[in-house]
Image (tube, rainbow, N blue to C red; front, side, top):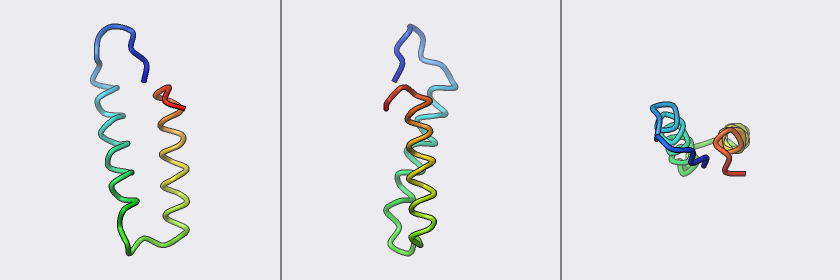
Length: 52
């Protein structure tokens, strides 16, 4: 994550979205296609957050 001073609402929002996506990955009912889509969303969000 980028640490350039203040912790912003946008950063908080991104973290909460990331946590939600990761939580959804643990659903045993999730189809493989949905699992791949979620994994890609997580990768993109982590890249935006500077976590890649």
